[in-house]
Image 1 (cartoon, rainbow, N blue to C red):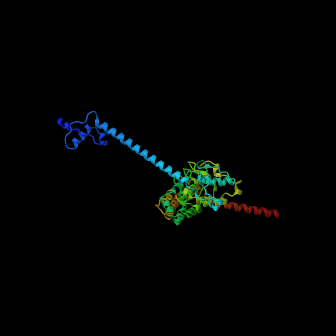
Image 2 (image 1 turned 60 degrees about the vertical axis):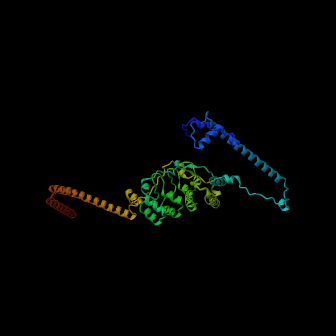
Image 3 (image 1 turned 135 degrees about the horizontal axis):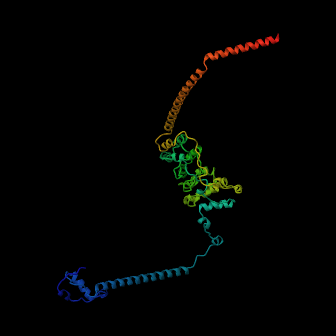
Length: 403
């Protein structure tokens, strides 16, 4: 509140007497200041000795204490009532139990502790241990599953190929793979179309890649193999999983960079379906009779980059392959460009050969002329005559000897 100057007669007002408890908490001098201000009179100075501040603090503390006292009283009353009601309930006679209830007590079904706490990976490990299998795991990036991508693989990975996979265009995928692109297209980090297909759970596209000669035992730079992505699918992709396990069931034991096995990627909401699938198919991939002969994949015993992808020889250059992968050329157009370039190269080779033959003929003409100059036709004819005379002399000698 602002204080304005005024005559000293303003503070000479009669001090009102307190009439109730609330007024007892406000000093009379301070009350007179409030009253004069409310009546439109000017108050020239504040009350002395910080009376307004002290009064506010005192009343604030009083109100807090009063509220706490009321709360304590309420809680005490509430506890008393609850205690009384509880005592009355305990004193009420219980209804007599019937003979049927006594003979057949009610039992509650409580889930087993291990079923509540175990993960899908623990459930799978328990199945294998029960069957006698070794569940030792391996870091993917330290094994032959991981190999740096080749130039052919990187050139075969582009927006057009990603679009084909996302649109599930089987015909276009067959055409591009038959046209000379790698069957294991991936970027420089090893993230491949194969990983994408497995994560999408697309069994049909995976079949096309397998028919084209794709290698399933591959890894990206994070240590994820195709089974990691198949387990990561939005919903269980058991068709894709079965195609992978038919070629390498040991993938269940491979760990990515953070130490996670494929089953760690399964969404928790799908654990029940996966448990049911394991119960039905465990004998197919991990029979009890195969525990003794089961061994790690050969790739686990070799260092990384031991088995780089060996794609078949392509008629297209890396530049043309990249143009197809990026959608700049169709596979057919790329083949036509390659054939045209091949014909031009052949023509240049033939032209160079003709030039070489011309130089040889020039040499031959010089050589022939030199030879002819030393040994002409007349010399050849005289030699023939001498040979004929020699033969006639031999015949005559033979006839003379016979006579």
